[in-house]
Image 1 (cartoon, rainbow, N blue to C red):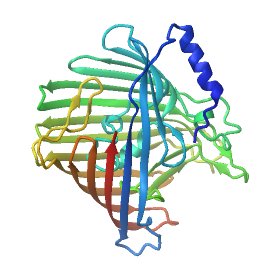
Image 2 (tube, helix red, strand yellow):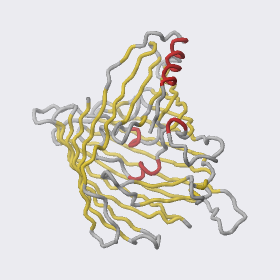
Image 3 (spheres, helix red, strand yellow):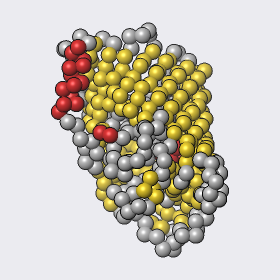
Image 4 (cartoon, rainbow, N blue to C red):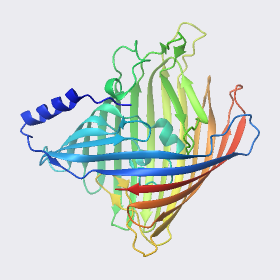
Length: 400
């Protein structure tokens, strides 16, 4: 939840005016609305209550850009589905030389293919589990971006979204803000329009604040890896979740490969997270370093022959423009897995198999149907040792 005070915008305007940006040019306001209906049926008698079958306003986002000068842009985005929230909002500068961009503000870290692909254009209703679990959060900081016809490099340095971007009530004794950094490098040896091949990887690190007591005095962990199901209702629990105490820093490595052959497109990504914990003289406090992992493989195919647009500047796959009177029809399948069990941490393992059907009657409207079979295994004695759940979702997405 973000509380934007008037003085913040006045200060921003005065700063731009002092640099000669007194006459900004406002671009069009754009946005996306997603209405979901999700249904869940548990195949096992785990004793746990499955998520509720429900209708849900999954997202309602609006944004735009303001041209402050020929080489300086201000991008903003607000979210309204669950109260007012701030999405990526930042300034870019392209005056260094061609194909170089500097960004500063509330930025997304440039991590992995699926995380950088827009949620408007991915083949499924939600991103894969390891993407949700291991991708860095939005943060306040800066980013450098370079590209040419066959490669892209991005690097960011950020601090967690405290202050005006986040709730501070449980953040009384954290000390200094912790830094995190991310890089992504991708090589594109083939890019001739209908055929694309790209190979790349990402690396991210994040320093961790000390564990802190909550308002009741109970120690609260500063690090958790978890993932929502790949279909979400208005109240969806995490099927797998690793709460880690005594963490000092973590690193996440990613490898990605993707290709497009006309109407067919496929992706594969692998993730490994390593957590460094503080050395302890108290034998009752765990201090062993940890390793978690996950991966997914997916493919999609346009039955009507269209192809997703590939954008070399950002090395991501965009949307589609229907070429038939009946619109564009797309089918997709995915297998994803995540393992959050290691040493004293028993976060669980989950494997998902997904299938999706999308119909684009126009470039702005998309109907989706998405089926997921989730298989969850737990070593934690406080939880069911196995859960199998069928999930079905339907979505109407409108882009304006």
